[in-house]
Length: 321
Ligand SMILES: C[S@@+](CC[C@H](N)C(=O)[O-])C[C@H]1O[C@@H](n2cnc3c(N)ncnc32)[C@H](O)[C@@H]1O
Image (cartoon, rainbow, N blue to C red):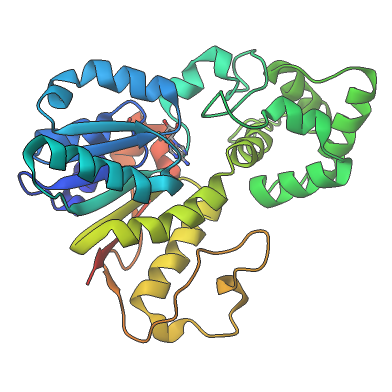
C-alpha cells in the first residue's frame, strides 16, 4: 500500500510528517523521496539503528529526525523535533501528516531471538522495546487460567481460549513455558491443524500475547487524539491496521471527529471508564475533521498475492478542518 499511502498523505516539498511506525523505514523513505521531511518514531531500538544507518544522508541534511519512543508520546516527540529544527534554522515546523502502519515488522518476525513467531524456536519474548515491561513468557507463566482465557478471547478472538488456557496451566505445573516452540506445541495439543485451516492454530494466541505484551490497543487509543492535536489544519492522519480490534478503534475515533452528531452521550463505546476504553472524547458540536476514506481502502488482489500480510490491511484517512 506504499503508493496509496503516499498519495493519501498528500505530500508537498518541505512539509513535515510523523511516521509513527518506522519499522524498516519503507514508508519514511517514500515520504523523503517525495520531498517531505520526517520525524520517525519506533519503540524498537533495532528499527532506529537500522534506519539511521540506511537513511543517514537525510539525517545529515536535517530532513529526518528519529526518536525511540512509544507513539503515544507523539506530542512530546514533535515538541522536541520543533526545538531541534528551531535551533538548526530558526524555523518553526508544522505537522502536515501522521502515519500509523500498525503491528509487527518483517524484521521483528524474522529476527529469531525476539520470539514473535511460532515458526522459529526462540525465547518467548515479543517486547517491541526489549528493555521494558513484561514479556510473553511472564504472561503465560504468571497469569491465572481465567485471565489467560480472557486475554486469548478478547485480544485474539480465539474460540478455543478456555481449553488452551487450561492446558497451559496444566503444563506449567510441571515446568515453566520458555520458548515459542513449547507454547505452539501446547496449542497444537488442544487444536490440531486441519487441512482446511488457512492459518496455523497458534496464530491468534500469538497475536493476543503480542498485543498484551506491548499494550497495543491502549497505545493506539492514547496516540490518536495526540496525533490529531499535533496536526496542522488541512493535515491528514493515515492509519493502516491489520486486525478488527485496531480498525474498530480507528473507525470510531475518526467518526467521533467527523460526525459528532452520531456520538451520543450514553454511548458506552465513548466512555473512558472501562479497561478497554476508547480514546478520550472531547465533546464538540461541529465536525473537527472530514473523512477522506468513507470506506477503508483495502489491498488489491495483485498486492495480496506477493505480500500476503497486506491481505488483512485496512487503510483509513481523515483530514483536520
Ligand atoms: C508494520 S511495522 C512498520 C513498517 C514500516 N512502515 C516500513 O515501511 O517498514 C510496525 C512497527 O511499529 C513499531 N511499533 C509498534 N507499536 C508501536 C508503538 N506503540 N510505538 C512506536 N512504535 C511501535 C514496531 O516496533 C514496528 O517496527
